[in-house]
Amino acid sequence: MFGYLFIVIIFVVAFFYLFVCVDGNKKGPLSAMKRILFETLPNALVRFGRMTCGDRFVNAVEKVMHYICFEPNPLV
Image (tube, rainbow, N blue to C red; front, side, top):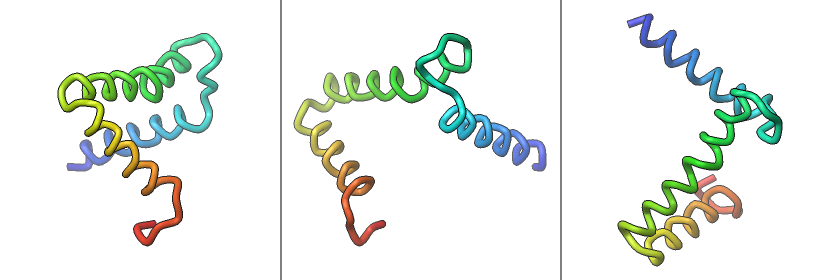
């Protein structure tokens, strides 16, 4: 049980380290990992969503996420 918790904590710390401390514009394995996690993977998910669900669905999801994350609303 504690082993799984330790693994989750290490993963979360590593994720936030990549998110905050690593410069994605430089060369190196950590920068490449950051670009994959925060640029390549989301772009691939959007392309896959457009192929499977269509532009209308993906645009609606993007509008909802923009409203939740960037607009003043009662959810936040």
